[in-house]
Image (tube, one colour):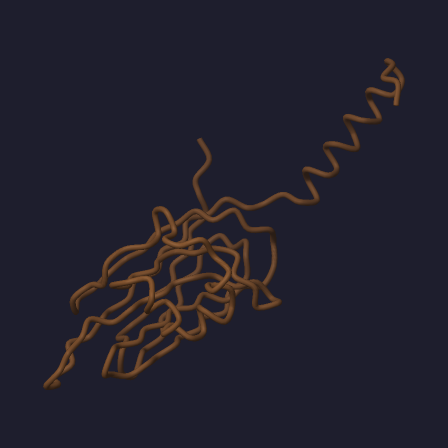
Length: 167
């Protein structure tokens, strides 16, 4: 296509339209969760995966992946089946060591197109139990606070979304 002064405005409008159609909203997302103390003879720290799925159940953002060794990734069954098996591991800035019981927080400012999503928090322990908490939410949103209670391997899980302030 030959660029002239008459074609330039049309290209600019087309490019702007494409940008606006695929625009993403800016917001801060924080996940707080508790790894409870479990009184058992043989305790192992849990493997934890925290991720976001879109409406088609595809992983679109990884927030945390805490394991001892890569060979244990597949023990996080839901995370593994939803896309973890196809990833180049470790995930830079996401992967880390297992954590002892306590309260933890993971924050992100994901670039997501508008739509319905699900926050997933999965925990599994060697010689222990398994738990997977799912929290559905819509993106974008100005403010959101959802609290779910785990039953065994996870305590309270809180999803907080706040719109980024513009200067």
